[in-house]
Image (cartoon, rainbow, N blue to C red; front, top):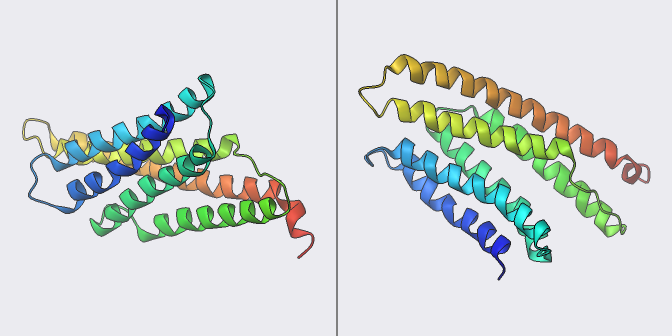
Length: 189
């Protein structure tokens, strides 16, 4: 297994660790540690693609698993946020709806011998989702330290919520963009 694929697998392996930090309340500094794990997992997303393209190590496994690993990381974290009453379930529903829709369109296109390539809006969607999640970890981590004024955590949470809503908007726009790109496949329906 080449390095980019190892990084993709590492991203998936981070998921249960992050979930433990989010779901077990008596772990000291769980928000800080969970946030560091999520940040490291997000970093592997940036690195695996760059390394694969730079070193000509692009594989079918990587093409399939890289976006799946991203979705697993983001969705599992957001679902834990819903359970912790940090994020509304509607956010998860909108993001899941978009992911199923785009994946279905890609499968239909592939069945017809076409490829619907990733576009800039899909990348913006993923980056804004990851930034929002990291912000939520950071704002909650502030509350774990008694020497940091909680007003800082309050402000960080507000900013994180704005970024999360921006990520939802980017998710919707990205889905619409992919639907527009795949419009030729709907003519036969």
